[in-house]
Length: 24
Image (cartoon, rainbow, N blue to C red; front, top):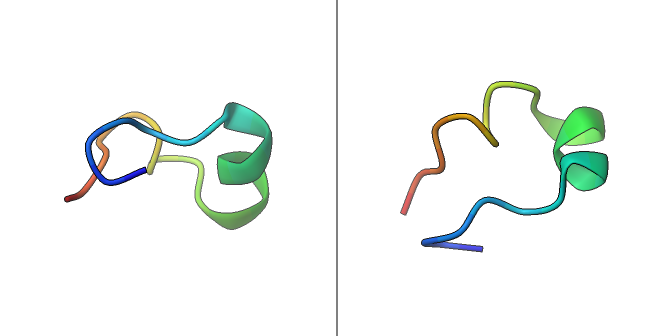
C-alpha cells in the first residue's frame, strides 16, 4: 500500500484523493 494505491473501495471510505496521489 506504500508504493501502490489501495483498492478504490477502501479509499472511498477513508480518503478519496488518496488513491490519486499515493503517499509513501
